[in-house]
Image (cartoon, rainbow, N blue to C red):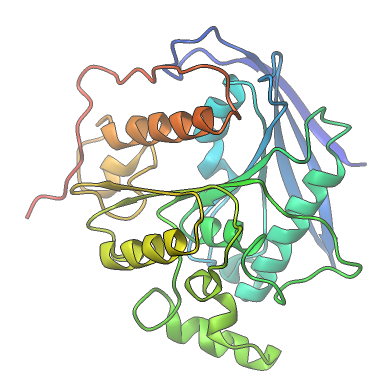
Amino acid sequence: MRKLLLIVFLITTLGVSAQENKIKKTVVVYKKVDNIELKMNIFEPSKQASSKAAMVLIHGGGWNSGKPEAMQRHAMHFCNRGLVVFTPEYRVRKRNNTTIVEAVEDAKSAVAWVKAHAKEYNFDPNALIVGGGSAGAHLATSTIMLDGVGEQNPKQDYKPSCLVLFNPVLDVSKEGYGHNKVKNELKPYGLTWQQLSPMEHITKGLPPMIVLVGDKDKVLKKHVAQKFEKRMKDKGNDFTLKLYPGAEHTFFNFGYGNKQGYPKGTINKYYYEVLQATDDFLVKHKYLDGNTTVKIPKGAVYPIRKE
């Protein structure tokens, strides 16, 4: 019942200098809510990194929309590097008529499911990287920073050992993103916007974290990212902020150039640089073996919006 689809394929176009891994993709249902089945894409490498680490990547979409396929290229890169990678569905406003609270609940359920199945997928549950893009990166932070929202009963283990965040929503105050919408959605639950804002929950002892964001991003503004960085470091946390000149929101996606009005087929240089920086960070923290070079195709450009 759980296993719906099995595909085996060889990655040949990721632009990684290391020997290619054979990757097995499986799709399972990890959670049922009423008549909704939430699926999990699982990418397993033929050769694992010595860390036996795994990664969960959560798609973005402003808690409104989006699908796990948005993270597939990133998932395939890190699976090719030896990680078992999971990309979950979660409930979103437009498709399921839900709120940010259900999205947080599903994200925690997804990560708890992953950790509970560590033996089945042969990885170390204490070496779990959780990340994502935009709203999905916010959901990733919920697994370690946003207690008291979307909790499971009985309480399950969804604590990550590392966070990888692509242009995340880190602040839902008036200075951040989605303040009024989030505040209004939380009222029926007796919750406040502060309970959903990572900026308000920076404590000592958080796991290593990298944030990658463009300096022209309007969702996570540069000064907000730098404020988050200062608070994290003031608490003694291992935190890396990577700012990309000229880049706007969703710059880390392969097809970002199209969004910026560039011709179809434009190769987004930011995409490859983000992969490289994330890979280097995971090597530094011993989740990946050895440094690799993410090859940037000839003709790649920074798709900076023309004034």
